[in-house]
Image (cartoon, rainbow, N blue to C red; front, top):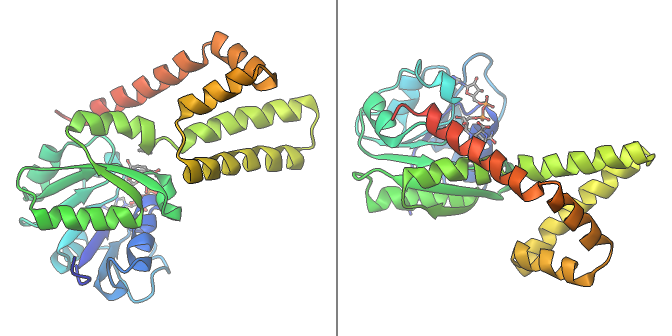
Length: 263
Ligand SMILES: NC(=O)C1=CN([C@@H]2O[C@H](COP(=O)(O)OP(=O)(O)OC[C@H]3O[C@@H](n4cnc5c(N)ncnc54)[C@H](O)[C@@H]3O)[C@@H](O)[C@H]2O)C=CC1
Ligand SMILES: O=C(O)[C@@H]1CCC=N1
């Protein structure tokens, strides 16, 4: 892929837009001088050499590829004519067809990264509209490879499902860790010890997964087979509905993603 794409990020001052910009610049997918970012109120002091603007049409006119990274509720009021350019959305819930219609282009890609883009560890599923070209796909792969791991998926329904599974995903280990910490503090552990203990469990587990790429089912089975303290905990959590609670939470995210689109 050419290293000279001109990339615009609407909402570049935000959490995800900033993370994508950081990943794209640091991996050389885009040069800082070819990057345009828009903000709504205060101009951020980030990405030296990049062009900041509060005029989204100016951003679109300067860019070949436009990433939409505003919150879904802010998108209807976004004025931007992309005139046949490649538009890449990271917005939850908003459909390919709606995006193309509003921004006057049939080259649209809908993606759903996650918060780990900030550390180049996002999982990003994406799907392209019928008129997206092979070069468009190459550009999208390059941007989201820079943010972590990406997969082109078969349907927008898959994106809606993955919005909960992986888009929201970083929140779920945090939810578990928070419950563990609360229990540890209720038990009487010093809060700083509890925090260090629980955070180390999470980072250590992540590292093990990264190095060994084991199946979670195999890990659970190995601990169950040990018939020790871990098996006692897992069996009690499951009897209390752990697996069903997770499935219900993921279903709620899936339904919310569908409800956020018009189609
Ligand atoms: N944060 C996350 O973990 C994930 C977020 N997303 C999606 O990413 C999108 C952005 O989310 P975040 O970065 O978390 O939100 P955020 O609120 O941190 O960033 C959005 C930014 O857009 C700016 N903005 C709003 N309207 C604007 C306009 N007309 N022109 C220029 N800037 C404008 C806001 O001022 C803000 O800085 C959302 O659509 C969300 O669904 C998707 C996956 C994960
Ligand atoms: O919670 C949200 O709506 C956004 C989209 C996926 C993750 N965060």
